[in-house]
Amino acid sequence: MNEERNGATLAGAARWLSVHDDLLRGLTHALSNRVGTISAASYLLDQQPSSPGEIGATLLAESERLETLLQLMRMLPYPEGAVAEPVIPTDATTTAVALQSHHNELREIPVTVTLDGDVQPAYVNPAALTLAVAVAIGAAQRAAGSGGRVELVVSSSADTVSIDARAVRANRAVAIIDNDADNDAARDIEAITWLLAPYRGYGDAANEGMAAIVPTLQAARRARQTGG
Image (cartoon, rainbow, N blue to C red; front, side):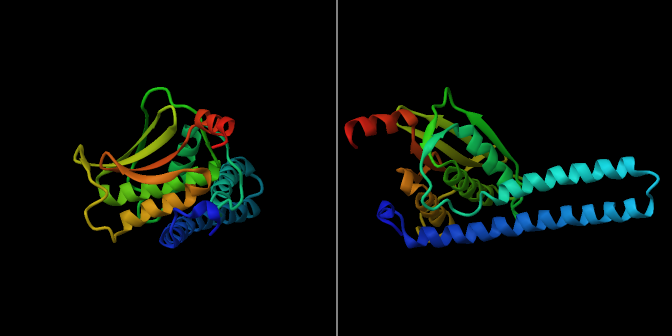
C-alpha cells in the first residue's frame, strides 16, 4: 500500500479481492456460455453450409456479446498507478451495473439509476470508480435479497460526487449497515475506500445505503490552484 492509502486498510484490500473473485467467476461463466454457443453455431455451419444466413447472424451476435464481456473483464484489474481524469458519473455507474449483472449469486436483483439534480463531473480514475460502485451495488443487493431491488442515486455538491446504493424490499428501504462493525457490509465500505483513496475518494454509509464518494472536477481544480 502506498502513502496515498494511509486511510485505507488491509481489510479493505482483502475485501476487494473477495468481490473481485466473485465478479470474475460470473464473467468467466458468461464467457463460457458465449464460447459454447459459438462452437455450436460453427458446427451447424459446417454441417449445413447451404443455409449460412441464420447461423451467421448468431455468430455475429455472439461476437458482439463476447466483446462486451471482454470490455467488462478489462475493468477488473485494479488500475494501480493510474491517474485521475474528468469522469461523467453516470458512465461509471452504467458500467458498474453491467459488471454486477454477471455476479452469479446477485444478478437477478434489479438495479435502477436515478439522478438527483444536475450532477457535476467527477475527478477520479474511471475504472476505480466503476469498481467501487460495483462493490456498493453488491452490498445493497445482499441487503435487498430475493424479490428486492437496488436504487442507485447519483448526486453532487460543489465538492463531491456521491453514488449511493440503497436496498429496497417491499417498497421500503432496508438498512445495509447494522451495528455490527465486523460484517461484510462494513468491509465493503473499507473496500470502496481502498479503491478510491488514491483519488481522495472514500466509502461511507448514508441514508441507510452505501455510497462511493469522490471529488468533483471543480473541487480538484480549486485544490490545484490552492496547492491543496
